[in-house]
Length: 160
Image: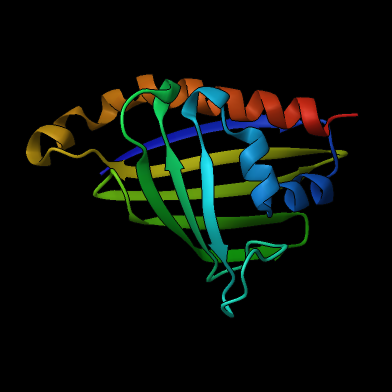
């Protein structure tokens, strides 16, 4: 399985950054427009529709259409872990249905003085069996623009 990582330091308090990333609004605000993201539905761990916070057990149903071309690609993720410590926290989502045989995205947050370090770590397997596994490390070419956008938008939206 391949891994992609990217970090950014955000000149904003840990609480603000953590809270922002804990919501569907945050997900929508950070996703590049060219991905054509549509949130189809969100269910909380207790079955509640559209929960305010994406807690462990929440399920998010999405679709994308890159640059508006082709059929919409469906994607279902579940928040499988979410913990917060003194000045640090993480949440992890796993793709349950979608284009990748495996996709595990861990969002890590660390207080850094008056700022916050945000780190994204994605473990993934590309479709295509053995060929997809061999090409896995090359996926950085596709992931980098998306995560660069996410991190730039995080700074634009949250820094004072």
